[in-house]
Image (cartoon, rainbow, N blue to C red; front, side):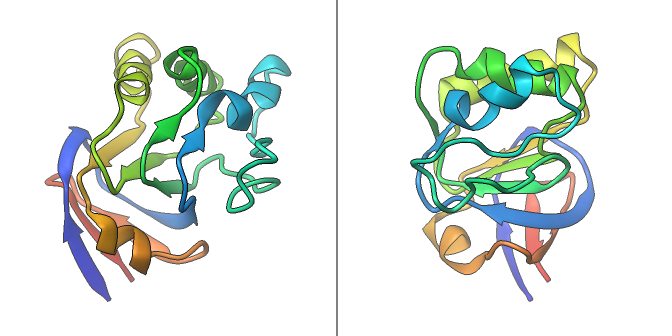
Length: 146
């Protein structure tokens, strides 16, 4: 068991399964197919990200350095949240990027989403957490890998 403390962007308490991307997550490539189909679950469709490609990330705790890709990234996150097909949490090892932050905040305000986002968890967090690990998130930004 190991704990990390990050900065709360969108708080909440949660325990769930981690899906880990060791590289920047391209939101458009990852979420677009599911969003366009108005799917109830997101199967990550970015073929350039072998860490998450083909995995169901709906309801999972997505652990990543930050998101990358086109300027539609925030809208794509907000859209999958509106469909209730989003990851339950985004845990960033680095600073949250502006596109992910905008999408998460819009989802909270416009969609009444309960999505959680914490950043600045550090490189050691991303080096430690593995896909399939159980992760517990606390309102204060404490993240524990169980």
